[in-house]
Image (tube, rainbow, N blue to C red; front, side, top):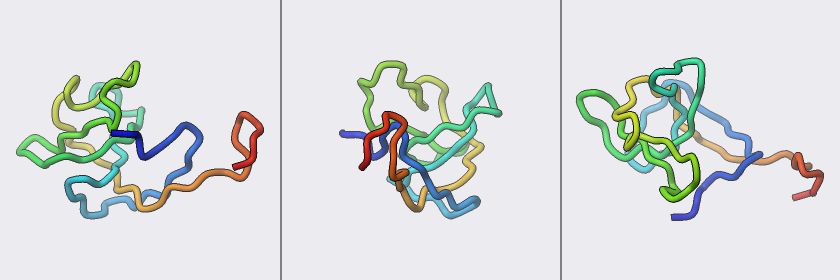
Length: 92
């Protein structure tokens, strides 16, 4: 599956929004709650949401296959947009 998000994309996140399988969410990284991660919600279990990366072959990929279910979901991504000029200086 191709990633829905790309480096430099900006996100509008609705905190506390209802989550359904297939939604892209922002969550706190288990073991490092100061760090936020963006993943796709797959299913909800007793211990929290199972979150997966869209691209399982990406180098450095970390998701619920590595750290298990996530209980601290901050919110659901409702909009993806990007700045007019990316860090590389190219216009979009």
